[in-house]
Length: 210
Length: 210
Length: 210
Image (cartoon, rainbow over all chains, first blue to last red; front, side, top):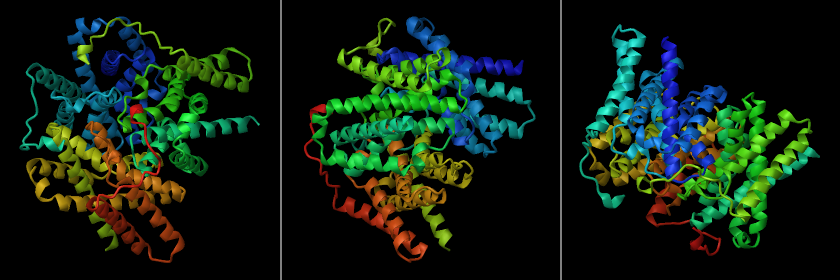
């Protein structure tokens, strides 16, 4: 049951990341194969970098189901371009849950490989964020981490909370997992709704140096 | 004999990719070592990403001949800058054959590593296209996959045809290889000659969102 | 004693690269977690690419001290933004020594993995330069290798000198190491002071093609 929920959320997260990549590529007027490449990179980019760093087999290389899901999502997105408008809220929710679960998977894969917990927070952040960063670089857009929304911050806070809870509380693993994902989703949602920004406590910046 | 032809085409493809990188870097007025770095990345970038994903030894790390070919081609390109104009057609043919053979090598390396054939098409496309994508990112140009010419599409169609022929026909391996390479070269050539574009069957795009 | 000096310079080089990443990210007005990500990538990017190519464990994955140094440097840089102005020369010296030592580490790691010496020069250059290149790509700046200062060239010349001295002289290893680092620092310093540029011996460039 527990595994099935994780699996379902991972598929939903992949679908959402694939849609976000497809829509971004269509806005840039790429041809269908270009759209497919961007959808693919957005979905698997973060996990690929994580697996390369950990020197474990890259997760999608033997996962035909996952590749098929990305392909079908991409074709679906190209045919029903207009869903972007009608399902914007749904897509945002998928994306947030995907971000939460991808972060969690990254932290756990790192812990399984005996990496120090603090470095595992970085691996979780990479898993959640790097797909979008690579997408933006390929599309020549201003990368994700520039934007004002709290995104990487949600991953870092979520990953740190997960580690604190597993270390210092006796809560069951499942409860902590669910709590972490919901925390990341909540931070993302509130940040977008109320236009939260991280404080920048460093003073002035000399723009002429840019 | 068969091996020697493959080897010759691989060297010609490497020379062509190295030239394409050198010329692009010289247009951006990089210094000679910068030109060399770009030539190198263009030639080996795609195969490097493929080998990292497959977790096999990176192909050029022990191939001094290949590295020497890139170096000599790069120096040659810098000295005889003007060849770009005179040999434009020759360069285009080399580049197309290189693309075809690199795609084929990517698909075959994936099959040898027991990767599912459909994912191998992706590995072939990565081998053929990612060198040019990395070159364009480093040079701050609009990446290859944006351009209107059919490029990644030729790799995907070529890779798929190769797999269909090996699975459903009794043709000899060599014949299928030659046919695949010629197919990719033909698609590329016709696409450039007649300015083919992939149809974009998704409707309007709101440019203001870009 | 010898090991301790290497260790101290490596830490100073990491601090300097981390500062350079932090300041570049603050100029682009990233939020604190974005600044941290850029500082991290700048410090470890080059060595990470090298270790992935060599298929050896990625050096920072088990090095909590190094990750801690980057974190502390980054926080320090955000709080004392103004040090950039006052310590510009100090930072430049750190950066040059870091570049020299990182190049040397790259060459040596390659030699230890039985890579051909000429390819090891490339690994040294990657170790020294790729962190800054990835930083610039993420920040959407014109990448490092475009700039007029001699940077990659210093790595290539330093790496080649190191190999020539170890092969053709009987000097002690330590002397050669120190000489190589000082050579790279000297080239960088003189290049910046006298605005050296590499000669571009290829003729005119048709800018309209850019």
